[in-house]
Length: 124
Image (cartoon, rainbow, N blue to C red):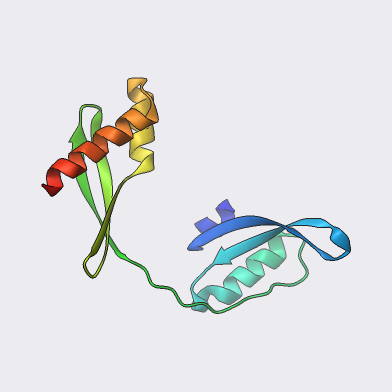
């Protein structure tokens, strides 16, 4: 998974499945740009036990993203702001909240809620 992400995969995930003869298996899904398909086929064939790779072409819509910062009593938290037309979504960055929670010996949820409070105050 880390190798694929480091090579530029947009997403990587595993799904438990059943193969023929009712054998359990794990399906590896890798989302990449169409121009990178051959690079990832080679990575998968070289680094897994598979002898073949199936692929599909998908289209996707992605919200535009940028980051803002809020300051809480625990420290600064990055807020991911995603927009699509009039739709706006804001989310505190998990890594920032987890780091601050560990530094201040408080539950992750306390930092997350403090960040959300600052986001709500900025929106007013």
